[in-house]
Each structure stands twice: as structure tokens, then as C-alpha cells.
Length: 375
Image (cartoon, rainbow, N blue to C red; front, side, top):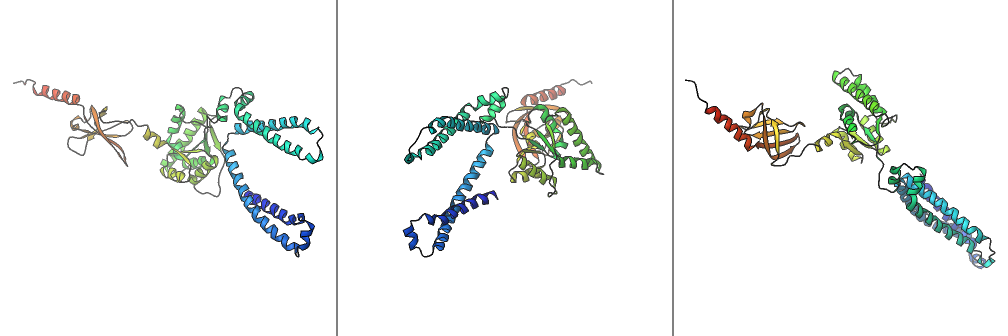
């Protein structure tokens, strides 16, 4: 709507100038024109076309400036505005004595020209000084805010708010992440997420009821421990039925980050250019990386698919297949990693017994074999 207003103003203004411009022609030329009104409308039509081109250019320029201003931190806008005002005030102080001097009528254009040039020059100077010394100005406003200074110069970006999904709250690991300090910024829980947790807590199904109550308990614990960081937002969207769609729209409008464990929600949010933090992806990325030749201590739980294979599990659930370890079921052995395989079900590590472990076992079997028998 605003773009149409900008273009319309230029079209009407330039067309009006064209309509009235015929009166500026010399009288001897106007006498030769038989139909002045037709000429007026023709010139006005050309003026409207020129105004349309100028309006489109002005509209594009305005949108570019607007987008650039939106990306600027508020501290930079504040310091530049102060610099611009000070520059204009200084220009007026400098020009005041000059305007008192008498100037001949034939040089009357000198005053406005000089005023415009001086205003532009001092305005640019004021903005330039604000960019250079804006840090000092902000220090005068808030002497203790080093963060404001870094944000103003672009070195530091303000932390985005984190919007929690229902699955992420019920999971519970978000509370542990907050304890470690790896999650920064405000933690925002929309009102419709709380309503979904309440519906789960009141459900007739025992499993759903347990999950809902667990989520509410975790939120209460987080609220007690981090009262300044946990924020409940009452925003809701009556025209949207699903909670997932509401979360995506809310995160986009807030320009925040959506924290979730839901795989499908992550895909939908990524398609709509919403930043996602998936705790499952974080957990997978933090798993220790074992390279061929690394040693690990593993308890053999059961037999593998192949003969003499034993299977154990790491603390994160990764399955480890150890060759020639079938006879060590129930015992902990040291194995050397030979390779790793990433499957859709998770990661698998293949290993073989440490040679020292094998020698120890062989010595044990030989000593049993050499024991004297009672006759």
C-alpha cells in the first residue's frame, strides 16, 4: 500500500507539472497553438509516464534504505541521529552571520545555495564523527555497558530468543543445557505450547498424561531456577489450527530460533527459512569420535550375527561389534577400533580384541590346561 502511495505521488506531481508547464511558453508560441487543452493533456500524459519511472525508482530506493536501516543496531541509529542533528545545528550557527551580510539582487541565489551546501557538508561530518566516536557517546549514556559498545560497532550480535517446542520441553535435556550455559538469550514459551502441555496432562491416556505432567514439572523447575530468562508469551493465532504451524509463524515473526526434537517440524521449519536447534542433532554431534586404532573398554552383552562375534554398547547407545569376543560375554574387554559405519538406525563401530587381551586369555587357558590332575 505504501509503495503505491509513493508511486502515485510522483505520477500526480509530475503530471501536474506537465499540465501547467504550457503556461511557461512565450505568448507568441501560445498564439500558434489551436487546442491548448489537448496539448496540456498530452504533456500531462508524458509527465505521468516520467513520474511513474521516477516513482518506481524512489520506491526501490526507499525499500533498500528501509532494509538497511532494519539491519542496523539501534545504538548505531541513535548515534547517527545525534550526529546529524548536531551537524545541522552547527551549520545554522555558521551560516547565521553570513546571512547578515548584504548581497546584491543579482546574486540572491548565493544564500540558498550556500545554505544547502553547508547543511549537507556539516550533516555528513556529523554522521561521520558519530560513526567514529559513537563508542564514547554510548559510554557517556551507559558507562558500564561494554556489550552495547560492541553491538554498536558490529563486533557483537545480540542473542536471538529461543522458542521451545512441546517435545523439547518433555524431553528434559533443555534444562541440562541451560545449566551448562550453552544456550544463550531469552527462553520463550508460547501460550499455545503451555495449552498443549495442559491437554496432555489432562488426557485419559496414562502415557500422554505422564508426558504432559513431566513437561509442566520441568517448566516449573526452569522458571524457579532461571526467572529472568524464562518468558511466557501470550501470542496466539486463531486462524491456524496446528501447534507446529503456530510455532513456525511465531518464530518467524520474532526472528528467533526454534528448539525442538521433532524431525518433521524441523524439516517444515527449514523449508520456511526458520533457524532450528535440534537437541537430537546436538547429542549426535557430541558423541565421541573413534578412529581406527583407538582403544576402548567395552562390556560384551551378547553374541553377534557372525560366529565368534560379540556385541556391546557404549554409554550413548552406539553398538560395538567385536571380533573373536563371543567367549567373553558378560565380561569387559579392551578392543581396538577397525572401522565405523553410520546407518539410518544409528552408528555402528567394528573392533577387534586388543592383542594383549588375547594373549592374557591364551595364558589363562594354557595355565588351566597345565594344572595337575588328582589321580
